[in-house]
Length: 220
Image (cartoon, rainbow, N blue to C red; front, side, top):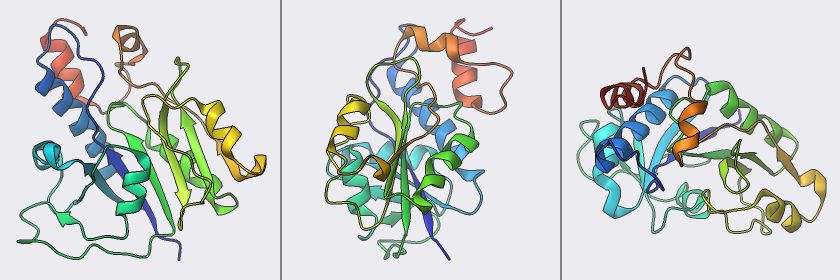
């Protein structure tokens, strides 16, 4: 049976609405993404943070969720951490425990897409049955990815993937054969004022972000 892992990369956010406290904003985004992961089926889920941002993981994860502490908030760091020791969130256990190993596929998604549909994550994983890597672009942006997924072990040709800055065309250029990379359905991230207009109040979920925006008078 194929073991799949979906990891929310809770990296520092690049923008905060001026009416909202930056810590509250980042926490709300992370909470909604983590809550989304909890609804997924047929996959295991986790979050990844740097040591300095462990507080954020502890604030939003569900009990027993695996937290990967990584040296830098990049896709490669997350993929590299999947076979190493990780700490579960309290109160599932006390101290450090050995994380489960043997994942066949790992997807990494950005932590600032609070209204991301679970179906979009499924589309990111689906091509890995026949291809070593897939990526989902950020809609409405020239640079950045919503997420990336890879079969393990990671392909040697995998370039550095900064979810905020990578240009999808540069990833395609690094692929030895065009068929090795699938580009799947994208979604928006909240990285600037224009992105707020992409939020659909009719969509279920993203309650923490919705509440924060409504309280600031930004969303009605």
